[in-house]
Image 1 (tube, helix red, strand yellow):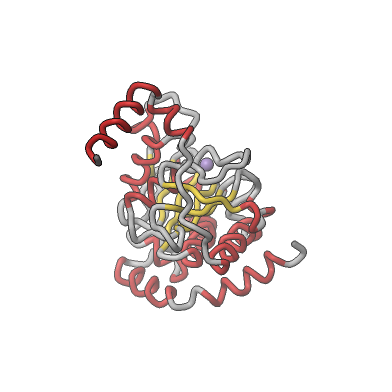
Image 2: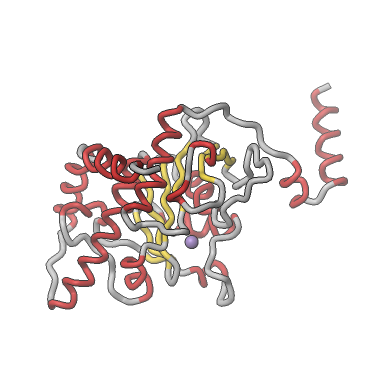
Length: 267
Ligand code: MN
């Protein structure tokens, strides 16, 4: 009985529908409603990242679904500074929305799904084009922790070269699963990775940590550019960076509450 059903399903699918069509036609099942507090944090994260100058009209932040690790939550395609709870959509790790209802989705959602797939401890992903970071992705100067708030930068942020995975003629976007997988592989255990000529990805074990890191990645980049103009720079060594990161991990709610209040005013 079971054997016959399996046989029938496989045969029909293989014969009747090419892979791409099948993937689009079958919307994955929902994992159910995410916790309201998680959705609230995701909305706040969008507003904070805009208010703190990490994202502008572009960039996005996701969080892993609290009821199913193979689902994540991400806004529909829109400016993060305008996101409300109604704009939050659920996706499977392939980047297929559970309930699209005609809503546009981010071209680069594969960044999120492939990182969540490859890195089970990652609970939240920020992708941005925050401006001060860009020079460190296109020069030989590494983005390294200049002060204790950015200890999570450790020994320095790696740079993703899209030409290695996509060849010399992409539009620079992570617009499919293959490029997403290459990006997730290059990320490894790093919390921050720059994308040459594009931006960065920042991940965390929670959405507040990811936002904290995204904000201080941009601040560190701004200050590192200034410090390098002054001359030789002393960076945190790896032990200092590791201890500073551990201390700050317990302090994430303090700036979050401040940033959240400011970002949500006048909504
Ligand atoms: Mn982008």
